[in-house]
Image (cartoon, rainbow, N blue to C red; front, side, top):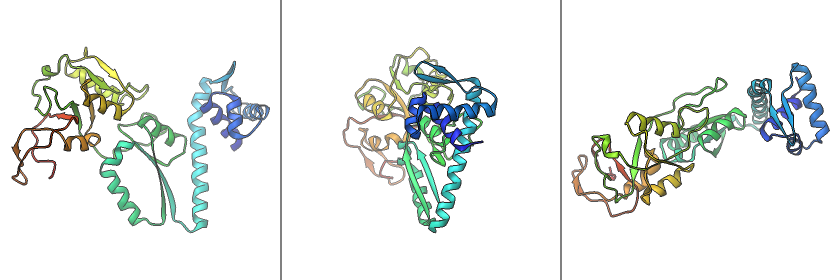
Length: 292
């Protein structure tokens, strides 16, 4: 099967049109059509419905796409392996991760990896969880680190760790810093969350929706915001509660205003400085101060 035909097919699928695919591959539209025609002839089925100004994948095209992307990714890996061997390097590793994961133990793990494997070229880039999956699927990166498991039989997914999710609110919220023993205390609260991602049942948006249903708060009003930073800022400003990964609000929680108490580790009586930062609504009592 012709590699150029696979590249043409994937480009049309990603860009949604023959003209845009031709521009990416620096080929004329007739050349693009000819390459695709040969591929369709070999497969014995049309891969696109030709519509005015765009192309839409047929059922056969949708079935063929992940295999074409995997084949191109394997070819790219092979080319890089040969290049690295010729240049004297022992290899390269490209990794896409969600930006907020850079504030977790994962960064320490990557630092240790670089020290132990100095001959490996580590290439990093950040993206959203859905984008990380797409980058891996298209072969643009070898590995991806994201929140929650990704759906798809064409992907191999392993759990790399676990992280607590916190409900956060503005520092002046009536429940800020308190242990919520009864979810009825959250009734009537407005929430801020991610839009549910289609075909990803474990996305942050679906997680919030499931938790609200389990708590009997399925009638709660949810403002959909597609940026974690924006969610935190809106929660800080009192626009609602947000369910976020603990690492994403670590800095804010270090500054949170709290009552005076004694740390069980250092036996130090402490009071955090006043702040407008988001405050955790704790599901359990805090056992030690942020200095520990």
